[in-house]
Image 1 (cartoon, helix red, strand yellow):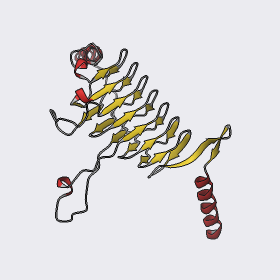
Image 2 (cartoon, rainbow, N blue to C red; image 1 turned 180 degrees about the vertical axis):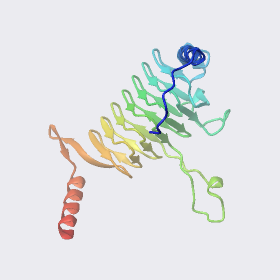
Image 3 (cartoon, one colour; image 1 turned 180 degrees about the horizontal axis):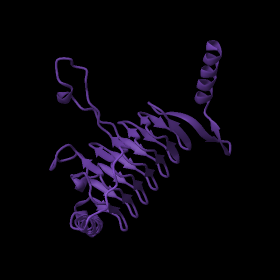
Image 4 (tube, rainbow, N blue to C red; image 1 turned 30 degrees about the vertical axis):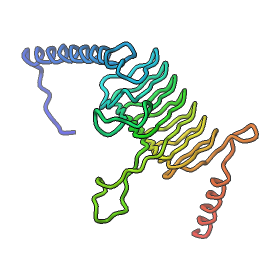
Length: 239
């Protein structure tokens, strides 16, 4: 640290410090009030615009974006953290192909800063919890035509399903066509692109199964054991 001579605070310094502390208390009090009053529930004016919004559920304030909520359905007792993006379609007012584009089950918890962007079908089961900053989408970007900017190419869509009782760690990305089974734990930072069976642990980019519940207990998956053996053999050769 820089060496500085200590100076006894003046009366002006003490008054300014007291005003800052009082102002800080007032700001935090006002923010707490805004968070409480700004939360969305089934009985709020905005909440009634959703396709369905179950009793005891809440979207914390402030959300980042809520788009075309008439196509979004939320079950009972679900908590959706602040900074959430919930979107059905790409632009406000867009007409979607079905009345249920995004479905979130009962007793879910979606971490702050997460994004659920649906265009065709995203179904999240009951008791699904996520860490913060999870991204789930059912639409990808075409890139095959080198003469056309990627943003102007077709955007293929494939349904996404996340089974009951699963957990998605911080920063998980779930891409179109992903089907996550029941009671699946997905490690932080993983990218899910395909199918994960019931009762497993998956990690990595793309996510692969490393443990499964089989014959009454949790065991390393066959692919994980093979990979570990290969890595161990490679290590022995390099030694």
